[in-house]
Image (cartoon, rainbow, N blue to C red):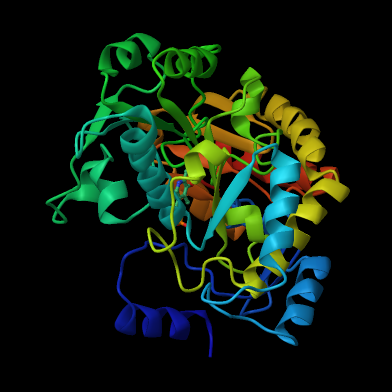
Length: 402
Ligand SMILES: *Cc1c(COP(=O)(O)O)cnc(C)c1O
């Protein structure tokens, strides 16, 4: 079978809820993927930052295989010997008192919302069913009814209402709007420290810190959705660390498993995660020993291979090069670490054709919204590989679409 055969099968039997580039991948290692025709591509998306450690990292694959030979799933009806170790290691790495494991990112967001609400009722003293959570315009927190309900993207909502009540929206980067939106019933403020899906938007300097201080003063939980921006992607363990504070709750997923398995978690204090009593919340697969063994090794690789520092250094280098391109199409290059967005002028005719041209040259990137290309290679990418990619990016951005 060849590329076109797979595409036809998928289009016929699989729901069309994505618009993928027409490359059919059959293998991957590190920063590179290989398609069914044997053509190699440098991965500049990293599965939306799930493979920060690189595809099929040998150490994480080995940890997964070893655990598969023992036990994969116990359910939380019984205990297993991996969950306690992941909980300890993750809390020690991040400085939080407790964690709660789930599977997908959206599930962890839902978990954080449930925790914030219950904390509001049982600790803060908000009257029953009155809890409010403030979210930011242009956010992306997942695809469940609640998370699309708190979105401002019309396409995410169209046809899927009615939505979960209890959310207020404020513009991203506007501390005054946040101050005005907070009421005595506000329990949480949820934010991506860098908005990934919206186009790698970095808020104005000092905003996150200001928002955190506002939350502090009003006894509101600052909830950082670090599913995409965290675990080294933005050149820090968590992107909000760029403004030197620790969010009250942190939501992680994606790279928590190095891309080998869906693993997510919520991190917070004993006061917040302590609101969950047995039976309040759960997940059949959440905290399973296979997931925990994979996540433990994925975190060790992140630290021991100094991937966070690599992201900071290589990101600064690569962003600098991109910012010096004098292309008539480029409006702005922005980013932190190896989390970089290149926004094009509307006259460029959309980012997708540039992504298609880069694919032809062996570089896989994806447009995010219409006019921005996101560059987010695995953090194990080599400087020479970035230079190779740069040559193609420059050529495509200078010439339009060749
Ligand atoms: C990817 C993502 C999610 C959703 O994670 P899933 O695993 O796809 O459910 C939530 N928030 C942010 C910021 C993300 O990037």
